[in-house]
Structure formats: C-alpha cells, structure tokens
Image 1 (cartoon, helix red, strand yellow):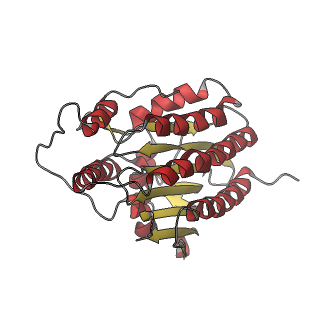
Image 2 (cartoon, helix red, strand yellow):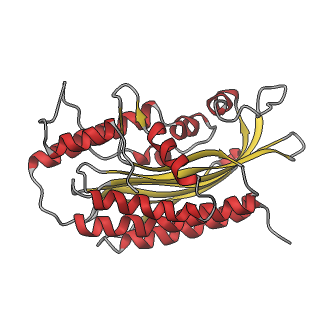
Image 3 (cartoon, helix red, strand yellow):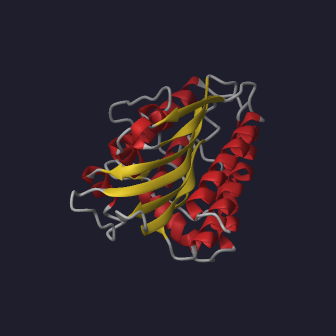
Length: 312
C-alpha cells in the first residue's frame, strides 16, 4: 500500500537534510551541529543542523520540521492571498499538517554567495481529519555580493534542468515568480539574482509533484557547491567586506518585512523562534543614503537587482 504523501514528503526532507549537510561539509573543516526540538502539546517538531564560525561558512542552517495541530485565525489570514479555498471552522481555525526543509547559508568570503532553499508540503484538514486542500511550495535562490555570470548561469541552468522534465513552462514561470517574490519593495530591488520560487502548487498528481520537488532538491548541491569551492579562498579587501555587509542588510530587510514563511512561522503556536530566524546573518550593516560608484562591480550587481535578467 502506498504511503500518504505527507509521510513520503517527511521521509524525503529528512534524507535530503543528510545529503545537503554532507555536501556542504565537503567545503568545511567544521561539522554542522544537529539540534532536535519538539512543539510539546502543539504537535510535531524538527531538527536544525547549524554551523557557525566555520572555515567557509560564517553561519548556516539546514532545518527540517514536520508540525501539525490547529492554525489560529492570524496564521490563516497570512496564507489567504494564495489559498483562498481554505474553509475555517466556526471558531475561525483549521487543522493542518506542514513539513519542509528550509536552508540558508552565509559564507565568510564576499565573493561566495549566500543561498536559500526551501521546499514544503501543506495539508489543511476538515474537522473529521479528511483532506480539505493540499499544496507544495518552495524554491531556491542565490544572493551574491559580487556578480560572476558563470555562477549565475550554473545555478539557473541546474534548476531549469530539474524542472523541464515536469513541464517546460515551469522554469520560466517560477523564475519570474522568484524575481517578483524576493523583491524588496521599499528599495525597488531584488535581494539577489533569483532562482526559482513557487507556491500553492497542485496542478499535477501529488505523487508527480513529490518527484518534481525531489528533482529540485537534487539540483541544489551541483548548483552551489562548485560556486563556493571556486570563491571561498579568493582574496578580498576591507571595502568588499563592507559591501557584503550592506547586501546582508538587504537580506535582513526582506526576511523581516516581507517573507511569508517568517510571518507564518512566528504566528504558528509553539513555533521555534531560533529555527525561524536562523536565516539571519551574524552581521549586517546599514549606511545612510549609500550609493556605489557608477560603473563599479558593486554598481553592476545593484543594476541586476533593480532589473532582473534572464540567465539561461
């Protein structure tokens, strides 16, 4: 008998957590530390694999969670823009199950890009525990401080290849969605050079969706490890480090002001704040009215963030 999709997805994210941590540790002299947690009476828990002050990575985390219980009205409201078919009970709550893997990696070297990955599965249940609605969501994106076109092309090509076998329209749709989602609206710029992003996806059979997510997972290490391997030991100046800190400031702004995952996590009863805010860098900075010199490498990156381009 085939296991429910929720069971298969939970097994997948736990396996991918092991694979991704092992792959990232090939760039490191330090190991990730596993930290398991439970939601107590709220239902479920997870494991955070975290590294800080490594040789290559200043901070990073590869987290899995599988949680269930009852969503309060505030959490439902934060999902309503994309999930209008959720039908709360008379009390305004719904039963739910959610599992996913979420990862953010911040390297020391300003020439090595930050990266983010998240793939997740949601089910909303009726009072009798039957499935009311379900969907997959997630993506992966790259946030460099300095633009290397070969890095950008590699990252996008690997994710395009992962999606093309499930529909040639998916990569262009989700590349555009990524550029639009990771937009820092008050700055008029994206936080990086994008990748793929999707949500509320239920257009194919759930078993096909699960395979598609697995394909995207498998694209990550080949799209990121080679980039860091060739950038992590590059020489850099104090000014380049300062620019990295400014770009990290943009990262913080997006995650705290706009990111729906952060908002949803903080509004979920029994959520683990340490895991939710793991995405934030150790250090970041903000300078008043800062503008890079016209034509500089910093300016080149900023122009791409202000006007996203097609990489593949």
